[in-house]
Length: 116
Image 1 (tube, rainbow, N blue to C red):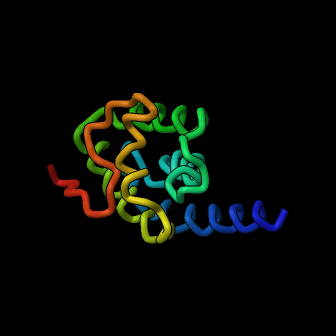
Image 2 (image 1 turned 120 degrees about the vertical axis):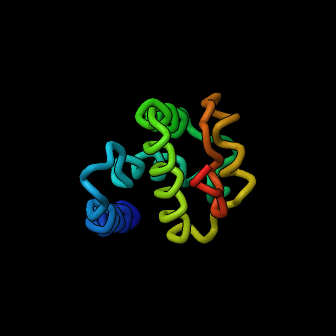
């Protein structure tokens, strides 16, 4: 119960911050939060494989990021969110697309160059 309360508070705070994104953007950081939340246990090394929910969310994100601007936005959002998960394992983040069989056009990494 406490864990769910913490997650709920985190989502509220995150939503407040991420809703400040430019309304002209088709994809927002708030759109990415379900993917982050579903994949957090794998990213943090709490489980050895991403869940089906994580992979479904990653696939959904891939489908939403159709344009170059959307993909750059998704990449930048993931970089903005990363500091909130200091224990995330870089190898797990990089492995997510392959393990979920989702061909992302950008790497999931803290130091990604989102301009390319």
